[in-house]
Image 1 (tube, rainbow, N blue to C red):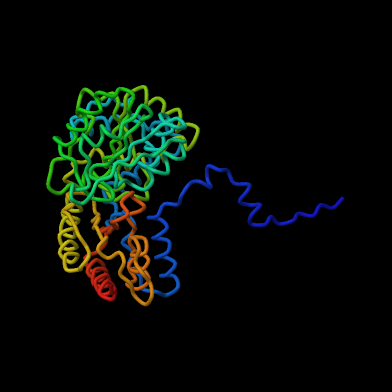
Image 2: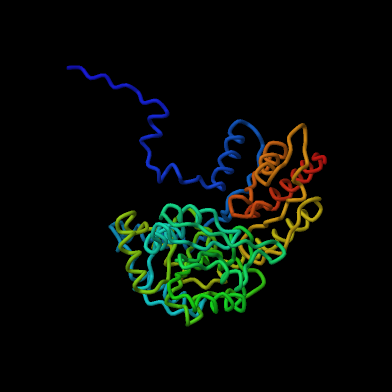
Length: 411
């Protein structure tokens, strides 16, 4: 008997997909970068400032450590939570740089900070649990919470509050269903940095709510321009309910290596080890040898990157201040500027009206040939994100194009 295989139509194919994946939104940072790349491939000269990726190469001493790992045959399955010597080094790093006491058993190494966050959320959040997200927030927080069946609850902030929330705002957002808080400092996308005093205000609220676990995403720790980095887990009253997330992607220009890690209460670290064991197992063995060199290094080894980012920040802010409709604050970390562009809403060009930041980003991509990310992606629809992790030449040209494009808007 001969069987004939008929091709599935598009509707049937979509019906085969789970509700889980169909309800999951694509990262708008990745989407905007893809649009920019497609335009480039078609011959359009586009400058993309949409991705949060350092434009520096990984330092040579880290690359040499990876090569040595290959020569020493680190080519077998590592322990799920990471090699012991790496977890010991991360433990020392937390003590050295953050005055946090995490034993090696409280460390779990993952394939990037994104997986670290997903591990924790999947280990803690049940369907129907509420997760507080101070806005603006990193795009993946929202979707990871949805994936776990949780309910994202946004806590708004604005450029006037330096994109930071107060203790009162946090308290007002808490309900009997609240299970988790996720925030970043320095913040992606705003570049805002919480001080020790500001974190203390949040800690005073959190210590009253023993059922809330907090993820403190500190992946941009080394890109902090004007203040000393502060960690929420340094407050003893809530230490056993805080997970500190960090990694080497941003501070050491190691985005492609894919390595992040957590310091967590032991009960939660064990849970994340169990969860990770059913997904990816351990992070790459060679990446772990490179990461060992990074976390053992004096942070001053990579200060040249921070200094370059600070110089670029000041340059971009100066150029932005010459563009009508862009309201900025002074971001003190990371490599983003998050201007409020709501003054441009309602303006138009050639019959195209700018209704929101998504419209503005599409206009700037098509008319100005510059790729940015709309604030809707981060829970702040009046803003857009500009990454200045690019060369000074690219930044200068991109801002010139933005200024020329905005000048065409009428209304």
